[in-house]
Length: 316
Image (cartoon, rainbow, N blue to C red; front, side, top):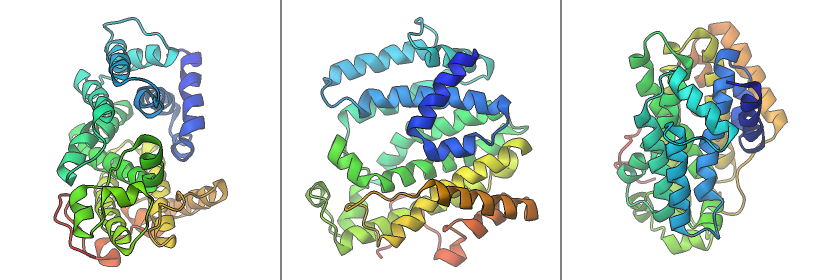
């Protein structure tokens, strides 16, 4: 990959993924540079459907298909990030299937804006989150990829769910999308219309409570697999999990109200989390122990009983 291609992906990450960028900077160069390219590719595809308010659906679909062909090498790339991604796909053995399911998930956002149950949402995340985890695993090249990949899938989905829970207001206002499963909302009497009106209720708080617990079960599953990654990648991935999980602390501190204001935290807090994570890492070197000590997720014993990933969550 050319330096200019890496810098193009890095610039995209710096602008649109500040939390992930902090963790990426701690990866070894052999993984850090490809990660910038991967992130740039993901954002270019994502923006086709996320920043396309005035673009007809057929034009969005056409652009995604063009990106698919460029990413798979059947069409010359029209962007330096896409050129770099094509090289990366070949050099690191990223499968065509992972590229295809990722593009398919982006295409789903053109037509689908509501999810009946978690199974539907999980199918969407197979492309939007799990495929990302699989591509990152290919770039890291662990000694035993078969052990690492299921955990990478879980962690990718955990990150995605945190994004959904953090961004409820933005998603419904800017894109008319609701990623909270309807079955969970119906259990607590929350309608599409209430969310569209940004109407916060006890029922909405209960929905957030349930979905946070679902995501936290995935964090625990994902962090348990960090041990299977190369040693020089483990701390950076652990820090990413700590930083994303911190949004859960913010959401709870707001009383689950993500409709009045989007949960956020600044650079100082991120650096404090970095310092805490590094201190515990040097002390134990065990990802699960560090995650329990630093993150608000903890263990099932500390945070309430674990939950199923399917739609079997108890009421609040």
